[in-house]
Amino acid sequence: MIIIGAKGFAKEVLEVLVQVQTDEQIVFFDDVSNDIPNLLFDRYAVLRTEEKVSQFFKQYDNAFCLGLGGPVVRRRLASKFILWGGQLRSTISPYARIGHFGNVIGLGSNVMTGTVITSNVQVGHGCLINLNCTIGHDSVIGDFVELSPGVHISGNCMIGNYCNIGTNASILPGVRLGENVVVGAGAVVRESVPDNTLVAGVPATIKKTLSKIEFR
Picture 1 (cartoon, rainbow, N blue to C red):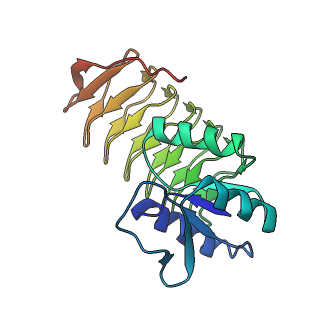
Picture 2 (picture 1 turned 90 degrees about the horizontal axis):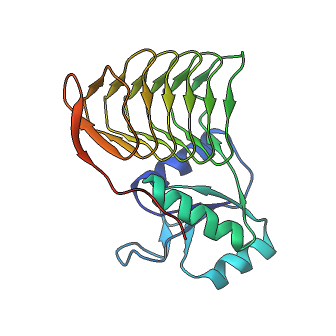
Picture 3 (picture 1 turned 120 degrees about the vertical axis):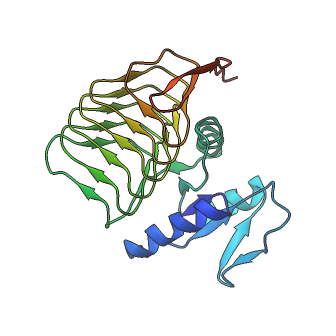
């Protein structure tokens, strides 16, 4: 298993893989950071080139998971590794509490320790559900959404693709967030928010319009 990234969140993903007692060979990938060693924790190799990734895929398997934040960056790196022949996997902590009825978690998502997902919740592909988040019944989370630690999403909410919700923010029942919405830390969102918008505050209000996300 290759963990994309080799810094803070990637190390938390490593912990999840240890929690589930995987028997897979684990390495990291980081081709941009110059301040990390070639071995993390004196044990896990850090790959830095496409050639090394290809060698790993041939020698072991082609599984990879996302170990970094940022909806756009996660989407781009997932697409790159799929083009290189990789197979995107999810990492779900055994210490997350996921209800038994109607829940769907999309491919490539990270669900971290302390998260609670109640019932009939749909989580899209490539999402990051960080430590101690809650997602209430009948909510729909789009693709490559990032929930920072302590985010609370109430029942019957809809969160659009590429949204990024800050630490300890709350989304109240029935609220709809459009695509590419950024919610500031600690905000309380009481009303629906259009695409490409930054909101913050208690109650949350619109602070600025964001550029539309485009992928090439």
